[in-house]
Amino acid sequence: MIKFNTAFILSQDRVKNKQLGRQIERTVEFIRNTCELLEFDETEIAHAIGVWSINSFGTNLSPNLVDSRYFLINLPKKFKAQSILIHQLICRAATVLFPKLCLAAHNCIPNTYGVLRIAESENFPHFAMDLYASMDIPKGSQIHTTYVDTLEGTYERETILWSNYFFHCDCKRCSDPTELGTYFSAIACTSCLKNFVLPHKNASGEILWVCENEDCEYKNGIHGDNFKSLLFQTKNEANRIPNEATLNAIQRLENVVKNCSQFYHRNHWILIKIEERLVETISAFLAKVEKTLGRFSKDEHGDLIQRVIDVSEHCLEIGDILLPGENMHRGNNGLRNFVMNE
Image (cartoon, rainbow, N blue to C red; front, top):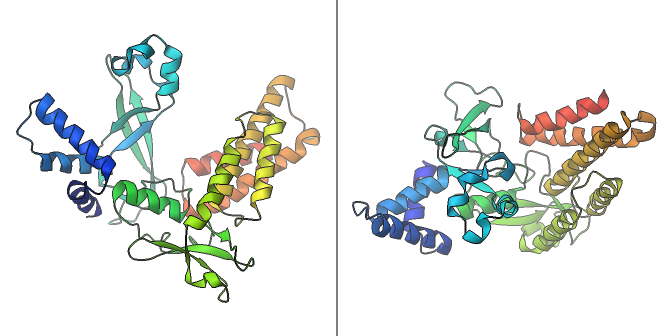
């Protein structure tokens, strides 16, 4: 029901969303004037855009995975002869709609995960999505996928859901300020300096950050704008570190984790993301050492090996609560943990 209601909102409320309004206007212009398909009026086209916007999947593939000839026809002439620029510019291969898959509802703790498959044809790639159950789904239960990055906090997920899909999620995770006891969005309180502020969402989807300390001035909540600059600064600090399998990159990531520990709960989503990148960087560094020397020594690299084990276990611990079952997140962290233990 949410999906149909959202499609209705998209078709009726487009004036309030300027980006959506422009999209509908351009599409109406193309279908009715350019294609001369006058049997479709603006309301029908707007409704179709609503259905497509809610249910489609973006295929954000590495450009190297898709032959650039599929995209040459629509590129400006100045780019057509520069294949290197083509590969730098293209991120979205396609936006696809799967009639059966779109029947799955959104949940911030999905019980499925999808795997996109590409089958090349003579003129254009064909896409298919395989949907796998990540856990046992009782007969008669709802099949859930997710529209958001489940490894982001409540405020971030709510922002995406409302701005892109026009609904507020009321799943058990979004309804719990602690996110099932993980404190995945908890930020150190800047008032009492003793506890954490947590996102409390009301019926209209508005989020206030409330301190756990009943004696704190933030016990009645403050708006999240106060913490946007902190998150922005942390992201920038991490993004400035190059994706290199070097000891320097490892140390810089470690410094970010250490510096941020005074501002965030140790399970905060942004720290988890940085920790996962740290594990990837250490693993890549050890793989490079093994390729160069034929091996890496537990005596010489024991601290790095143990760091991968400890951090991957931490990520698995949180993932088992927020992204339970068999999925790629568990597979990636579990594999690294297993390899290092071996």
